[in-house]
Image (cartoon, rainbow, N blue to C red; front, top):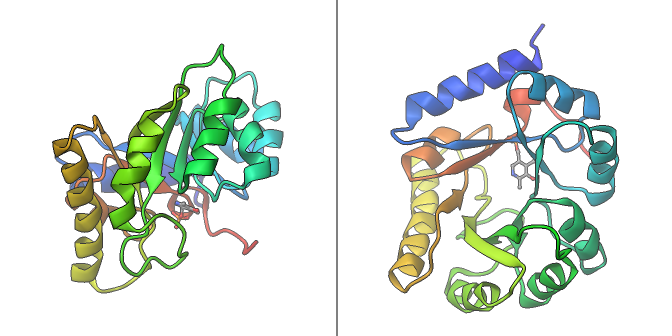
Length: 223
Ligand SMILES: *Cc1c(COP(=O)(O)O)cnc(C)c1O
């Protein structure tokens, strides 16, 4: 039977095979119980990604004794911004000014700034969430001016495809967009892209953080 430790190990091997420079692994634990996170943590994993606020808060409470880093990767609803700002270390899915402002305002003063990425809707993005590429510089400017947010980079979820060239082209688009932002003065170090199915393509195009769920924990039941 596949265990979480062996899933983690297999994913790390895939990452190391594809990567020339270190790539961070975010274990996407959405829909899995606290016990699964406990197992992954025992196998050395510290950073976990969640998409549903209520579900995540429950797990955080259960696991409060562990030294974990929590990343919010789902769409941010206005009425959930406060809870996210209070309990997460990172948010990968900033897609509008209003949400960025709410998160900054709700971030408790005793915590370090919330580390954030702007979610970009690169061509053909299945979920249709994220900002169109041409609006990213404006949003990046806005986010950079907020005191309790620290803009780290860009995130995207391209539509799944078996076409390797198309995959690579979409990830390359995000890398180039980050490159242009850095040239214009933004200090960005994060490209959050690549999941269980396509992490190698993302890494070959410069991903610095891959978000991997099913290849570690197993197939999720549809929510
Ligand atoms: C669920 C999810 C993932 C992980 O997907 P897998 O295919 O299970 O690896 C990554 N990123 C986001 C934003 C997700 O919602």
